[in-house]
Each structure stands twice: as C-alpha cells, then as structure tokens.
Image (cartoon, rainbow, N blue to C red; front, top):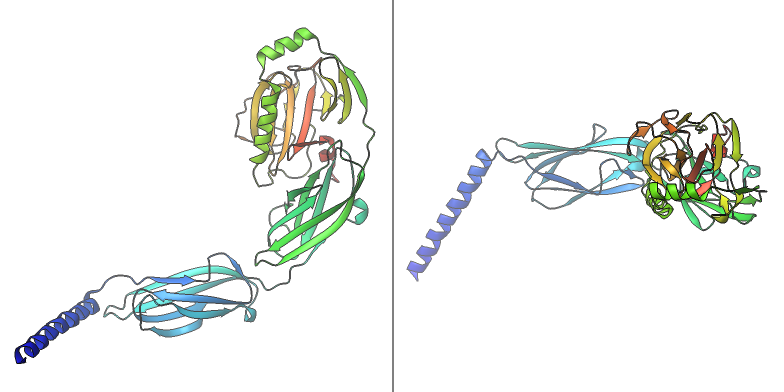
Length: 398
C-alpha cells in the first residue's frame, strides 16, 4: 500500500511538472496571433433596433470593443477559450448611416500577442416611405406600348418588384444612387382594353416592407392594315443563306433570360437612321401570300440604300447573324430585358458579340436581306421578349 501511494505521488508530480513546464513554455514562447470571431454582425450589411452579437477567442486574454473609435467594451477579461461572450450594439442611440466596429484582443502570454478585427455596417431605423411620381391621369397606355412607372423612396432599398398583367417586373434606380426607382411594363398588341391593378412591393435593407397600389388602363389602338408580297425566288435564296426563323426566336428567349440586371442605357433612344419615310408602322396587320395574316411588331423605316445604321442606345452586342426572314441581323441588349433589333442589313459593321456599344455607333448598313421586298430597316424593341413600339422610347417625355 505504501508503495502504491508513493508511485501515485511520483506520477502526479511528473504530470504536474510537465503541465507547469508546458504552461511556462507557452507563456514565454507562444508567438501565435490570437484568433477572434464576431457573429451576429456581417460586414457592409444593414441593421435596426438592438443588435445581439457574440465574440469568441481561441485563447484567454483581454478584449476591447470600439464603435466609431469610441469604447463600447473596455478591457473585458476572457478566461476561457472558444466560449461565446454576448454583447449588444444599441443602434437606437446612434445615428443612421455607416459605422465601424473594431475588436482588439490581447492574449495572456509574456509577449502579449495582439489581434484586431474590423467590420463596417449600416444602421437604418428610418421608417420606409414611398410614393408614385406620376399623377393618376398618366396611368393610361395604348396597346403595343410600354407603361413606364416611377416611384420615389426615402432611403436605400434592397429590392422592389411591380406586379401587373399576371407578371412580375423588376424595379431599379433610374440612375446611379437615385432615390427614384422605375419599371417598364410591356403591353402586348393584343392586350385587352380594360382597367387593371398595379402593385409595387418594396423591401428596405433591414427587411421592412411596403406596398404601393394603383390602377392603369389599356387603351385600344387602331392598327393599320397592309398587303405585302415577296417573290418566291427571293424567299428561296434567303432560305439557303440564313438560319431558320425558329432559331432566332429561341435565341431571343434565351437572351432575354440572361439580360444583365443593370440599366445600360441613359436617356431617350434615338432612331437608328434619319428617317426619310416610314413604310410600315408598329402593329400594322399584314396580309401576305407567303405568311398569311399577322401583326408586324416593329417599324419599317427607309433612307438611302446602304446608308449607315447606328445603335439606338448604349448596350452590348448580343447577336450578330443571318436568318431566313430577318436577313443579316443585329441585336443589342440594353439591360433589364430591353433589347433592340435591326433586320435586313446589307453588311455588318466591325462589331463582335459581347462588345459594348454606344448610342450612335455604326452596326451595319441599310439593306434588303431576308424577307424584304426592298431596301429598309426593320427596327424592333422587345421588353422581356414582348415586342413594343420603339418610337415611344424616343420621346423625351417617356
């Protein structure tokens, strides 16, 4: 028994010596930078009310927390590693806007290893407010045109969506950092004239929600009628040179879905040529021997043959190809699902798919390739792949 007790004390002294030796070693020779973590507060995000945060460190030591360089917690002792320590950021007692928080931690070693953690965040305790910009009398739109909706908010928001005609449309700032947001709602040529509901759901950066509601009217438009004939020989030639029209429609659907969530254009659109004459208005109901009866959802405009065609607005070249019906074709993506289309070109300009292009830059020359009986430009505008009158987009008051 005495021997067992003696062995126990010997082992205990040995273990204690190792433990104290390790502690002494780490105290004097530990050069590792402490690691601290802050949860409950993310960089560059928005917060309201009191924000519950938690701090943890992988070592024992002393912690100080500064908000906008002012002490929030001063020399708090952390006596256990990897344990979460709560604290609250009282956002209601400070101003709205951008703030910075700094965590400073020093461990208990002889060398006092130190680390800091910095995060920036925003406080938003402002009630969300918004209102439509246009008077109620402006909420009328002709068949085949675009309903342009604008509303103003009192602060930065996370997102806004408009709901109309059983569809949802994104809302975005009319210009960078603007408090006025807008959306464009395409009304098809066959949209039934009637009164419809419009709502806009707005969510701010801290999750507050607000809904604006209104009504708008679709007004009937007296579309013209026209007969057209293209020789069978011309049609056969174009069929051999160009891709099937169904391929173009498939590409347009895909391009519309992939359109940048960014407004690439500024101000009004311009016409792609100086218009000498309009040979077919938007929405004209055509009757042809080859296609039967259909609605022409673009404008046909003419000038001198092979005159230069230019981009009607800033954007990105989304397509440059030749098709059976549209001939040599260029499509420009202006962002948010807005695309302008240029058909029947004689030649392409030195442009490539994916390049940025600016209003007035040349994209080709006036031609009669594809389903065309003479030199003209088929100028089309689609919004979320719905064709609308492009001439409306050239108006300064649109």
